[in-house]
Amino acid sequence: QVKQIEKRDSVLTSKNQIDRLTRPGSSYFNLNPFEVLQMDPEATDEEIKKRFRQLSILVHPDKNQDDADRAQKAFEAVDKAYKLLLDQEQKKRALDVIQAGKEYVEHTVKEKKKQLKKDGKPPAVEEDDPEVFKQAVYKQTMKLFAELEIKRKEREAKEMHERYEQ
Image (cartoon, rainbow, N blue to C red; front, side):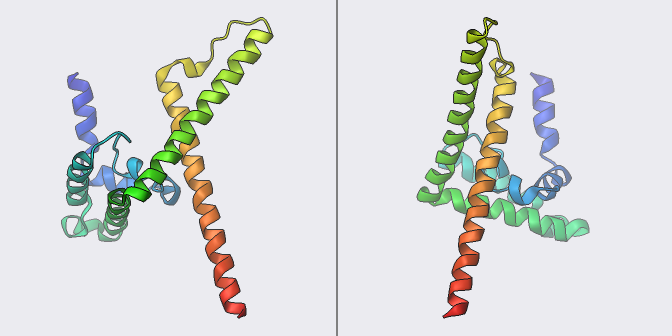
């Protein structure tokens, strides 16, 4: 129990959070607002607000003047995630993407087990381990958020191109 608390609290340092929110690939990692705020999708609006306050203080550029540029990027990611989750329609979209990721992994696991059974093998898969399952859902969810963002950018570029041609 103490180790878990220490591990959780060690993440709550300005440097760790700025590193996490500006790491390579962060433009995709940061598409999931729950991931940015390190919140469970079932979190209440009050819990989300509390977490936003906590993180925004940690990564605020004024509090991290030795690393102001990265702190600014981290702060913007936290702010964007919070604003997105305040909008109930946007929050529902994010929850739908997370649910789709989970359902995809569940379906894949079911198919793997079916194939193993068909092959006369024991239907045990690595995703039976809750941590492995959770990681698979995390990866699939990240892929879905990334695909949606790519489609959004393509749509935006197409609209800009059409406007330009008029």
